[in-house]
Amino acid sequence: MEYRKASLGDAERIAKVLVDNFSIPTIQKGKEIFIREKQKVVFIVAEDDGRILGFITWFARGEPRHELVRIERIGVLAGSKRDEVAEGLITAAIQDADKFFKSKGMKLRKIYTLVNSKQIKLKNFYKNKGFIEEAQIKDHYNKGEDEFILSMFFE
Image (tube, rainbow, N blue to C red; front, side, top):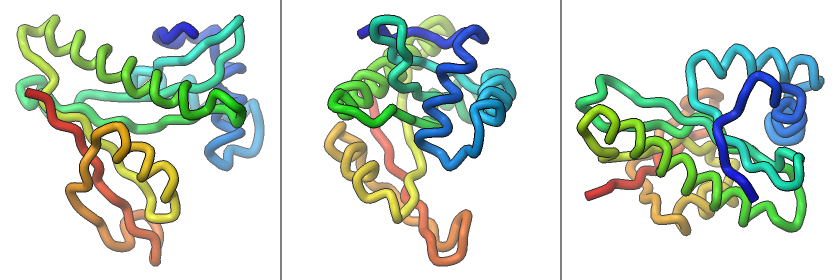
């Protein structure tokens, strides 16, 4: 399994993961979303034997001095390696973000994400990786659906 930054040439394969994970209706729409989001966030892909099995996106929040990163999306194709791929993506994102801050003479202090209250398995996945629940935001994106802020702090 290789974890690497995505390139524009990965658009169709990443679109398949978007369609599989995020209620995106078509591969074409998934490609458009990838190309648009790639301008704002770092995409890291998990690739095995030429097949992209998943991706994670992250971006630095605030000023670099805040040493703060948000995980925006994580998506993995259904299959027997799903948890393994997701764990590798989290690790790769943390390493990549830390490398980003070290290049600026700083270090990663905190990484966080938002998880919808309906995504119990994802919430438990993050908690099992060492993230802690910091807050619950009521009716954040949709009425009746709360969001949880899950964070990991680094020394």
